[in-house]
Image 1 (cartoon, helix red, strand yellow):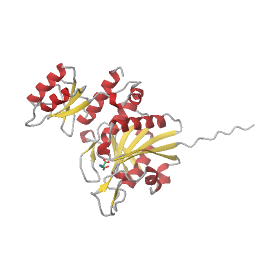
Image 2 (cartoon, rainbow, N blue to C red; image 1 turned 30 degrees about the vertical axis):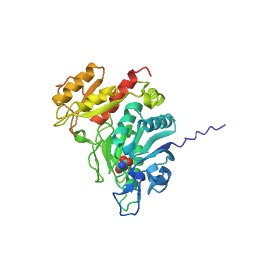
Image 3 (tube, rainbow, N blue to C red; image 1 turned 180 degrees about the horizontal axis):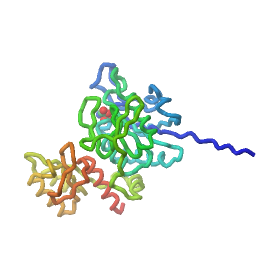
Length: 326
Ligand code: ASP
C-alpha cells in the first residue's frame, strides 16, 4: 500500500476592526471629511490587486471582529480582539494574522496585543491615511504589503505596516495627522521596508518585557470593568496638582506621568504624585519626548523601559491585572 502525505494548505487570517482603511467619503476626491469603518474586511480583501501573489499559496480567511473608528477603541474591543487572535494563533494551519485598524490608536492596540499574546507567529497590523473611497487610497497597497510581510517568518510578533515601512509594536508612533507615511519608530528605527513585494529587514523583532504565562488567559477572562484603571497625566508648564488629585479621588489604581525631557516633573505634579503613591496608587514615569528613552534615574518612579506614555499605561495596567486576584 502506498501512503501519500498531503500537505495541508496553510492559512492567513485577516481580522477587520475598522479605521480609515475601511472608510468612505461622499466622493473620490474627498480626503478629509469621511466616515471611518464603513467597508467590511471581506470587501477590502476581495478588491485587493495582486491578492494571489500576496497570499503566496496560503488560503485567505477573513473575520470582522469590530467595525469602529479607532479613536473610539476600548478595552472591550481589545479583549475581543485578543480572544480572536489567541484562537487563530493556536491553529496549527494558521501561519499568520493580519489586522486592519485605524491609524489613531494602532500603536496602542499593537503594543497591547504584543504584551498580552507575545506571538511567535507574525501578527501584522495595517492601516491607511486615505479612505477606501479615495482616488488616492493607500489602503490597498498597505494591505497587500501587510500580507506579503505576514508570509515572512522573520515577521514574528506584532508589527505595523504602513507606507512601505515595517514598524515594531514597541516603538511605532503616529507622528503626522495627514501624510501617507504617518508613522515613525523614532531613533530605534523601523524593522524594515517592503517595496515591490521585496522585504528588507533592518533588524528582527524583539520580545516584549511583559510576560506571564497566564496573562493572555487573565486578560481574556477578566471582565473589562475589573481591569485596573490606569491613566496618563501630563507634566507641562503651568501644570497643577488638580488632575492627579481628581484621579486619585476617582479611585485610579495607577498613574503614568508623561514627564518632560529626561523624566523631569513639574514640582506641583510631583507633590501630588508622591501623595498619590502614599495612598497606594502605582506611579510610573515616561518621557513625553517623541524620540529616545530616558537615561539615568532622576525620579522616585520607575520608568517603563523606554515605552511611550500611552504604551506605559497599557503595560502598567497589565502588570496590575497580572498581580490582581480577579
Ligand atoms: N480616525 C481614524 C481611525 O483611527 C483615522 C485613521 O484610521 O487613519 O480609525
